[in-house]
Length: 390
Ligand code: FAD
Ligand code: UDP
Image (cartoon, rainbow, N blue to C red; front, top):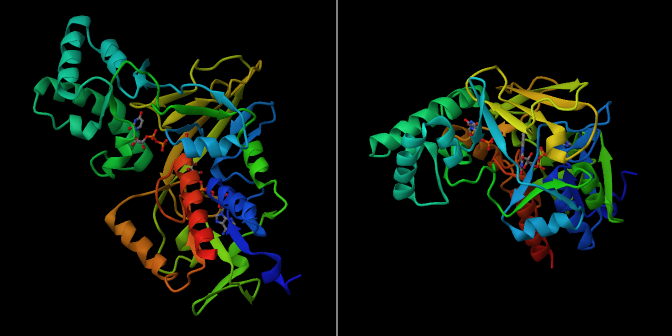
């Protein structure tokens, strides 16, 4: 079996998340024989969904809503799924009251009396224009004290406590791009995302990835930690003890590929607490963010995401914590900082002389990517590989 492995597979892909699945499909369609190794017992990575014991379709690793402005990403996934299209909305529970997030002009009119809200709305529109997006940290620096007053409300009631729970740090301490993902919207749009394409794969994420990997050129092995089959010696990568000259695309954590020899790259992790309730509805919304209270950040009620009709309902609460690398913990969010980037680059340098090993994905690149960005990056990489090969 081992002998001739190099001839059996042209490419080895580690991890069957979005990054690995798209890369595998692309290389297989280019005529390569591709082996995908996945350490979990299922494909789909963190986008994996399944029916729970009550028949409710749940997202095992947290709620995933596809959204993009990139036609290429949408068209690519549309080859493997139809869509349940909807505009995702989120509300924040602020001392028991539910208000739309991102904070927008509807929210403004809910939290201020009409007269004051009208004045503040005019100020915001004059300052930034209609249909614009203003990061909270920028709004807080505005010269107009009344605009700063709104900013202080939003900061205190939407961002500060939620961010402390999620990151263990204040909004000022984390990379501004993170809070910038949920700006203040000078708009009456209550949707969480404003991109033209958004929704859920009609039958779920897992069937979409199954369809993607369903190609005669692709072999998938689950329950395999690829590190037990890979080795680096000199400037060569060895696979199953043999020098491997095809491409190896790694989508797992880079530090773990080298046994964390320079120390662990820091991540935030999450504990998911699922609960099935024998009632038709729990919160009337897909996602409620708890921005001033509770130890969890948010509650997702899945049937509102997927459109599933069922007599009962399943919810999940998310409890963030600092990843330690202990057995069973999952690194979800890289923590962007100069220091962490330097450590990442130290690991990256270990691969500098090995041109056929590629790092791809949210873990391997130590970067926050949404699914659509991941699709695009995987397509870019495989385009590049094919360009190099031809
Ligand atoms: P992953 O999905 O993490 O896949 C990597 C795979 O590699 C995993 O399956 C892992 O088991 C495997 N692996 C790692 N090491 C090894 C090894 N040594 N051997 C074998 N296999 C290995 N994006 C959106 O667009 N919309 C959302 O609403 C959204 N919500 C999110 C909510 C949460 C809670 C989180 C954490 C992320 C969310 N994302 C969302 C981001 C989305 O999950 C990522 O863009 C996507 O999962 C990245 O895909 P990936 O393939 O890089 O990584
Ligand atoms: N955020 C917040 N309150 C909210 C929503 C978001 O403070 O109600 C901040 C928080 O720091 C979060 C970041 O904005 O990590 C990005 O939010 P997003 O919903 O994009 O996070 P993710 O989807 O990654 O969980």
